Length: 305
Image (cartoon, rainbow, N blue to C red):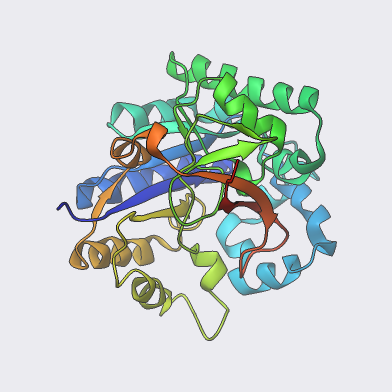
């Protein structure tokens, strides 16, 4: 029986994360001889628009706990407000191609991260198609090939988007939080693009809670993964966090997970170990995750026809 797989999924939200965090992560993964999946934001960086979330339950607490200014920098936090939002795909397409050329899996995170995260939940099909089409077209322009992987910004989706991942031909997706791979049910119909949900808490969800700090957060996460699961785990990290100030924490985690007996890999490795037709079917729902503000897409109960 093979060792359990711990899948590494990198969400790249901003221009700074692409230009600075991504190359550092590539270097670290090469040193650890592990694959990973990089999901890119491909359009404008409007990070400054996130200030509109100030009245969302838990948002200010997260800002205080995770030192947002230190991680993102003032310039990034002004994009879309006092500074125009730069086009990430135009400015950093060469960095993205270098990731692919280095052998890593690449895919789509979104077109406009903040816009998608804040509006998709209540958006109609026309708006959703337009946003996803922009990302699909830009990805093809940058890479010269169609994207096969999708992972939604902020784990935010709607029913239209879940149907569209199948229509656009994504082979597998990680748009949700959950416990194991599944096929989502939307309106009583099965979506045949498997969901490989994030199963572990992110670093920014742990830090500042129950005495967890950047110094001991790796120990906290390694305690969670101490007992391997047959279905493995999916860990989401961010180019703006683990690719910058939290890089030493990620280094320690990679070493710790190998010591615990895990194989480390990309989403394609996990997808290669499952049979989509044999996956359980689950409802999808809006739910909450400790340490993260607002609601997000979560794996719901098993579907009973």
